[in-house]
Image 1: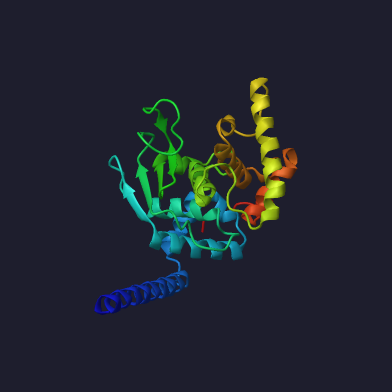
Image 2: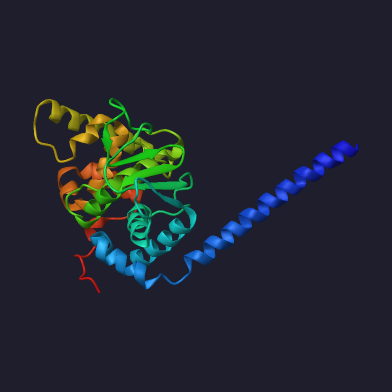
Length: 276
């Protein structure tokens, strides 16, 4: 009986400790989300992210809260001599959280680390590394909790918010896609019925992109999106945030699905403001 009592005591103690930790974590997150946003971080957002300057005030407030949670919860590590400064952290966090401003829930719960290189890198492992293992990469997303980014590409993608090319949005879209454990171009949707329109719409557009490329015709979406359904979702996400008007005009059904998922409509955002 003593052994059984000891086991029960350990189980109860572990459960109590886990409950206490979860309550503490919830409390910390609540406090962090209400902290004043540092003025220096605000200046970084205005300087680095034209998308931020377009947001209506309520969405700016929501983005700032999510950035604070992201920076508290995620670990940044410099690679290849890259220094991790507030400029690096806030610029990346701002783009990562841009994908979440319309959505509720945790901030990339399966993501733990962001590795940042100064520029394009050679990486020997990762999710999307078919072909030459020595190929040059601008970014990667791993299913086991890591995003890798080239800092110069992050800056370039952030500062040009109208070309549909944004490596940070691309890689963090992969994280959303991987949330269900599989990178297949279908993130976790809000209901079973949502998949009934998502799946055929995305498949139709994916097939359409591949066909146009086979026919050597111009395409609206980047050709890289035709290499894998997961890449298509990431490319579509970049385009949705940076070229919403054109996307809605050329691909209205797809735009409607993506807008429903992200719960924002970039078309309604204002013209870029001047830096304060």
